Length: 164
Image (cartoon, rainbow, N blue to C red; front, side):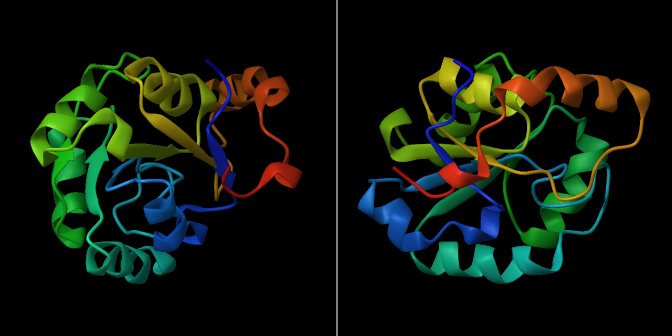
């Protein structure tokens, strides 16, 4: 439940070859601290080129976020990506909706995110392979520091980086 299928330092370290070798045709992406700083409106510099490589390889991509549409829509438009908002992760419903919207089966998808308690558990509950990426910028708010402290014993080792 808490264990990701694969672990990478960042989303853009995941290659299209690794995905294709494992039969993954679609990625369901978290945004905050996966593609952008928390509540940021601009993707990290590496994201655009990585997404272009994914699209060129025929891998479908959709954003899946617990945030509301006014926050996610402008971000998704910058990247020209479809999206699911109010996903209610870790419940599986947002992931299932995303699969339906892009027309892929569970076994053909992987979800990428930086939080064990939302992204990884949600993907695992939905029956989708989960890929953990380490957060890029530490959140400073008390609620996030508390949640990260609870997650710490469950975090995968950086020695585990790479796919299965």
